[in-house]
Image (cartoon, rainbow, N blue to C red; front, side, top):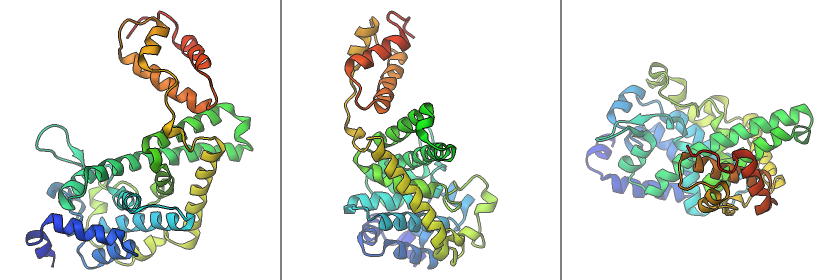
Length: 316
């Protein structure tokens, strides 16, 4: 069967069948079965140079990450259409591969996840883009939760205005990156912190071989203990805390907010004659200010820009 998958069945057909699995009632069980049958690396194949480094073991941690994300989404009762469900499950499945880079025919190496989606399962460019965005945003949301937790441990986030502002900006930036799909990032954020989701390829020797903990058949069932009820409950609580923080800070729709000022307005305000690298930094500061001050006015934003950057400041 492995030989047929590699030589006789087109990647387009593989991708079509896989999409049916992801849209079916038990996508996690279906992918686990591929791993147990030794077909995971035939379906989710990496470029040869990476395949030789990782061996066949990466299916285990990938299945565990996918199962954890699916568990959180189900426990939250998250409403997703077929496309969103595919985005989430694919990003979770490939989370352990997020730091790998594949050689390109020309130019810089590309993310291995992008190469896998493009070449092995022949899915859409949008799937590639959303996988990368979800990986980045999930890490940012996990970092925001860490800051939020420090505030809770100290007694109150309100007691540390600087910390609250940091959390607002971190949450808002991640939400704006994912737009209307931001709740998928919240689901994936706790998964980023799992041992199973740790980036593979850092130590090729420990990642290769079917005897590794991540690659054993049993590990796809309990995730080496990371899929226990206790561990799942902790991840669910983290996701709920992130959702609560987003609602409390009024950031749920921040992905649709328009900047109070555009580039021309900023240049006019500061007396600049032409755009430059500094303009991008000012525009980013305006967006961050809006995240911190959701009810802020244009006049207040202008005052912030003038105070921080100064009218007539030399252009860089």
